[in-house]
Image: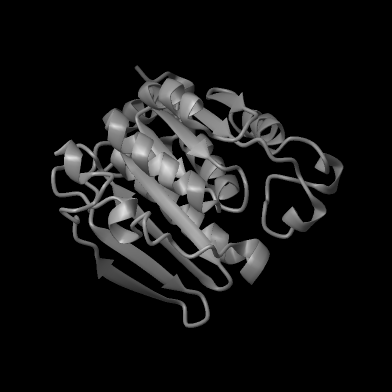
Length: 250
């Protein structure tokens, strides 16, 4: 049951037909894991925490650098050299004291994924490391956990929803087979503009909230944003029968 304070706090959300009180209760009961508390993880965690997601796990072993500040909006100059996950958790708890934020101050590995992925309802990939993306994809498939992938470089961004519980859902390796390897592009090599991360992270959070509240989310779609033209492009991604990650899990 939602308390009177929660009904007031989330009143602008519960009045939406696609959320309602039951959807808000679903958000309160939900557990999500965010891998990466950088440019995407910042807005994603802010919006999910503000929306009333009951438990949020933050996974990141990196520390805050001055070059992070133009786009990682949770952090200030006073936070330099401190752990991203720790500081993010402190800020989020000030934003919403009714949620639970747990810190995993280390980089994701197989052991960590195998322990924590079964505990959550949804995983959000907010990393910029290709090897970690493959690991997240593989472990979400193994543990049957829905996954929302986000990425951004320069003026461009993209997101994709993967649902291992749907037989026809394409996965990350269907799009970028590990044998061929995805492009090793990230903000360190190509640069990035902060608002692009806000847009992609915002859409990741939107998809997460809709899904957790009980709405259907389309799979097999790669959504690409061009920040220079302010345009979106939607590409259909087919599940690859020869995919080494998901084809054997049907």
